[in-house]
Length: 216
Image (tube, rainbow, N blue to C red; front, side, top):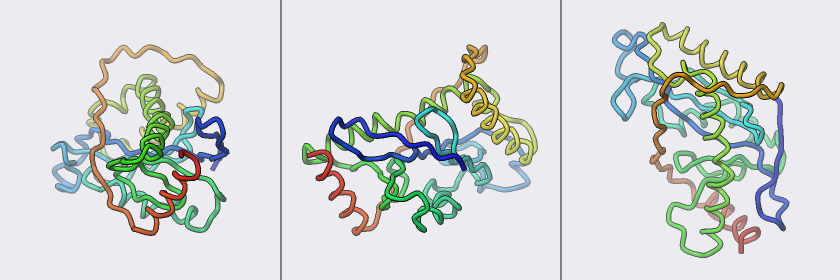
């Protein structure tokens, strides 16, 4: 896996951000009646819940496209090879950013649900601004390959293959600085993930120490 590092927006900070983590549902009619209700997501339609990680250059570092749409984001991450690699300290003293649907861990920073102090508010602002990279990556990807933003009336293996293949092609385009081609298809509006994962106390303490160190 190719690792690319960039720093946070704090002028006096050497906080290294490894990647931005996010999930989104790709709409699919594939085998929905055969496979069962586990593919029906909380919005009511059948889908895959795709976990993706990107770097600062809008390139995918990791894509998992095998979980049913009803699967919680945290479940996907907790069962991923990436989590095992992070737990083993493979990436050193660096962080990924995730939204509130993910567990806060020493290597995975999530926003404060109800920020109170100025440091917490500044931390959330920096978190949102930095994590916006994953939303931009999804946007560029979908404009370049509108098929991943629309309902795919294909078999499940083909849907998964399309997701992975277009992600690889997207990275190739980014590596060669190819211009974006305006999409001729009207893409659906992305929805904000409002799920919340309640994390362990120890990880909250570590996040608080990090915030006080960099954002006071």
